[in-house]
Length: 116
Image (cartoon, rainbow, N blue to C red):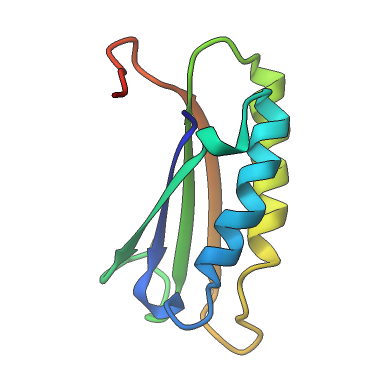
C-alpha cells in the first residue's frame, strides 16, 4: 500500500518518462499519506486505443489511480491528487504532441485487500 496504477495512451510511450515519474511520485505519496516510500507500488498500463469525447484523433490521456488503506480524509486525498497532477505535467514532454487529458483519483482500498 499504496497501490498506484497509471493508464496512459500509447501515443505517449516515447514522451512520458514513466520511471522518473514513479520515482518522484513515491516520496510525494508517502509524505502525503504518512507511509513509507518502500510501501508504494506503481504499475503502468499502456492503452493502445483511447477515445476522448468527440475529439479528433491524436488526443491522449493519462489517469493515475491511487488506492490507499482507509482512514485518509477527503481533504488529504484532494491535496494528494492536486500534487500528483502537478507532478505528472512535469513528466510529459508533449510541446508539439497530442492534446492531453490528465486525471488523478485517490480512493480507499476495499476491506478485502490483503498482501503477502
